[in-house]
Image 1: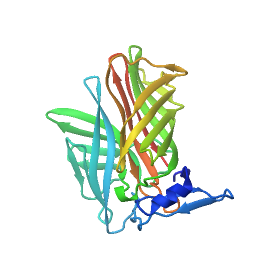
Image 2: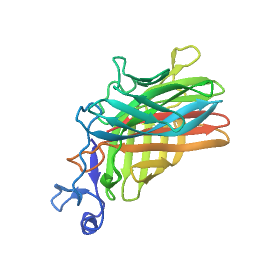
Image 3: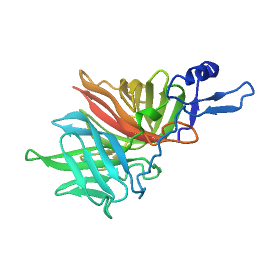
Image 4: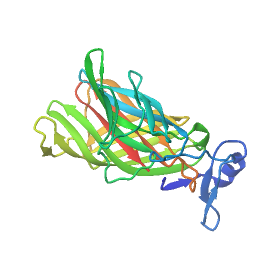
Length: 296
């Protein structure tokens, strides 16, 4: 769940509360935590493992390496929890699996597969999962990676308050010295619902050289995003910087950059989305890379 959720100017926020779909959490004069529920009954969210006879809406974000460029995609879909039927569409291909993940944690539709990734295996998330998605399109093989889950409905996204989420991160980086998989990172996601902004800090990466498949010192120590914009139950954009120590990495002329993510599930105690996940991209002429994160 979100570790913190508070409002700046609680009295003002409570006055506004009657006029907006929002929740607030702050402190009163004694310093005690004061939590105010939203003015509507929050929806009931099933977890990914639920077998209740109901459907849930899926949303997600992915990255695809194509011709040395990084493409971002938004995923949509649904789960029928009772039958375990999954439908996931990345805008180019729709995968439908009638009976859900098999014993190898894979959805299948013909030769197409969406496999639950082992990323963040030391973390426990109820509403969102990391994946790799492989399929044939126009006689070519495509492989993307990202996150997908049970998205928070727009009505349950607060309009005021601050929240902090912490979790895991992984990624990819390529420059003139080589190509690397970034692993075992951590994520911190800071959300200002009132300002409709998200800051993201990904750090602590180890690395694997993709040519030798050997562990090596990471060429990236941190990836930061500042002021990604919230719209409904998702966020996009922001200023992305890759660091090696205190030194900003030069990507050259930028082709594309920004975050793309969603809020997932709902925390009935904090009155905020329970989890958050997405991707971060910076694609330039001299270097390109991405980060994938899930946090709660």
